[in-house]
View 1 (cartoon, rainbow, N blue to C red):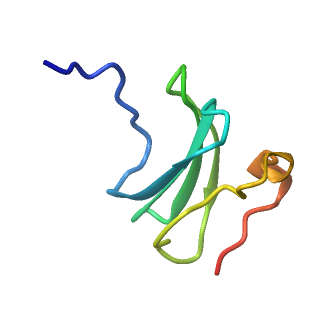
View 2 (view 1 turned 135 degrees about the horizontal axis):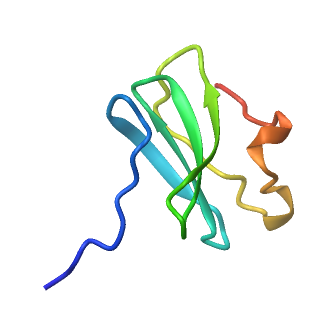
Amino acid sequence: HKKCVMTYFAHSEGVRDFCFSNDGKSFLSCGFDKMVRLWDTETGKVKESFPLKKIPFCILYHPDDDKQDDPSNGKITEL
């Protein structure tokens, strides 16, 4: 039997998408609450939250390691 190891709570509405960084140490999530959240995978804590103008459909990290900057530096793009 599989066992739940950790549950992540922060979005006030349903989660639409999530994406892990290449090293697996963090992940981004976006939801119907029009928020992007940057998580610490190991602790389950939200490191940063970013409001959006619209409900996002998906979220992605840049595939190149050297371009996976911390999104708090202003490098979140809404398309």
